[in-house]
Length: 433
Image (spheres, rainbow, N blue to C red):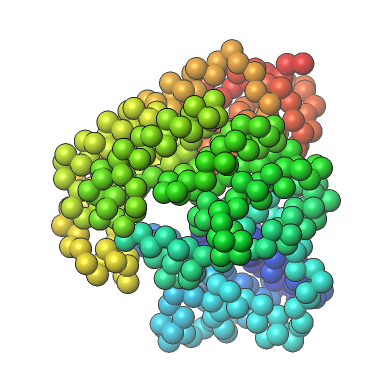
């Protein structure tokens, strides 16, 4: 056990990661040695930043807490603190059931941890973070919460209503991160297209992205977690006109059946969705679309599912993730609908969708062979440099493998790469001038 060392463990999404990075910077300023997701934690203090979104994530967070409780009982840990979404949602239950934890914090009051360590929160560095990703990219959180009350989703229960960060505050953070060597920004929010409505009385995401793109040193901007209803079409103009705004959009559609979308409390129709995809591809030629689909939502018939299958075949998304509906307590769906679709049926539908998408992804990757793409190098792994194109977000999308073979490429630099081979998940390439 190392004195004056704190181990931070982050569960769940990149939005949680940003909170952990902010906490780490504050702890560093207080004089602590801080690690993140260390494979061999040795600190006298541990902080677990939990996820409370779906069943599997909640179970993973609980197991991590119990693992560190055991370390504490074994004498390998002095203090254990828990924060984040799971703690926010189940604060009273966790306090009662896991008493080895010294204190539980919610998602937004983690700054109290500093006071409990007899330290002070330093407002002068509140925009600063310890970057836990490779130095050349970072996640940029522009808001908290969500006003979209989708029937199946517990996020608004956990995080509350949408709260946008002031534009100048975000831009100051971007400038700071650029000064630290960050070139690529993954803009994240629970629902980024809602940005600005609370502060500026209008959707302001396009204006924000333009201002970020104007900052010297920002080379790539990538957009995550958009919503299809009332999509701010001016964002497509920005994406088309600005070279440092990646032609990439992560937009969770969830389903195509108008009946199911209505039951999900998502104010969009089948016709709206088809039209939106067509408009995006017309306005931003070559745009990469990433989406998420849900199968097995209460009331989904075979006919509804077949509509979804046909839509996926038509849309040919560059990236598609899917999951089976699982009931989340407190949500509209859990209160008002019966989950009568069997786990077997859900899994069969999930498997079928992913098999279709596997063929689509493989074919789209194969179409890249012979083409050259601007590629950023993330790391070296074995005999390959690992990079990404503007159409690939870290950790979730396709990677470009470039044989080392005596080449000396710099991590975080951009190179032109010709694609020579492809599979569903990876591209193979070679450096060209």
